[in-house]
Image (cartoon, rainbow, N blue to C red; front, side, top):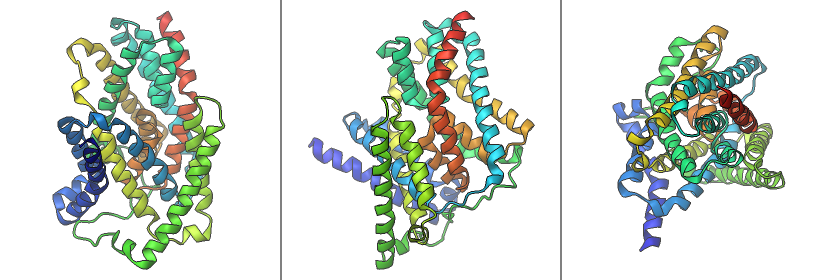
Length: 381
């Protein structure tokens, strides 16, 4: 029975995006909401009503597999421009400064009322400049107990989910109205227009399957090479090196004519992102929220996410960083690099994909150092 249940859940994760895409094409209102946000909502319902707790390993496997598949496929069709380097560098620096400033403010407001508040602040610095692996690394470095880590990680998942949902629902539009955006096109990705023909229709022809075979073959080779390089690196560096290698090999492959001329790389990559969306949303367990006894911790998390985003926005306005670069930098820091392909898909702007991944990789690399340094600072406050 458990095996059958597992198969049904996996099939649901793999096929529901196709149904949502069809509905978005046929229904104007759903088309405006967009498939990613709808899949997030469906995933949240699956995870909190059907409670696939026994599916944790399958969820981890599927969510971990979709991003390495998507990154090379989306990079195959990219074009790269040096003119955007200034915005990307400034976006990285302002993201780091924003996290540091908000961590200190949050410690004064909430951290001093939390047991081991300095350690909590340090771990939040790590996770919101890098990712979950930095959170885990700082837990070990600072001697934080397992229960605190699990609770903090659960709160982070839900708060980050709400941040990302709000960003996709209305945040991107507001940022684009506030910041300059004329240098970055809004139609890099093929639109899922309401009433338009399915972009996947030709995929199931003989020619389409041949192109898909070549593209997936190239992707498998890239993933295998990147994983191999990551595995020979020192402990704790696998994810950083893996994503860096994926990005490098994906960019290199985009210059190979045999890969470049193939159709459907974008469509297959986007579908992997859609599957990732529903799976990762199903992992947000709202039942773990113990709000009344953790108000200060939750407040610290919310302030970190919202505060760093708003401070980023102010810096971007002052320094004239374009809207999409600022947004992808914020997502890369707050949600980590695996969410960069997702947000670039939602923004329909493939040019920020490489910038977001690069910023996130640097965040991974500095997260532990920044978190430990912040712990030393917060102990003195």
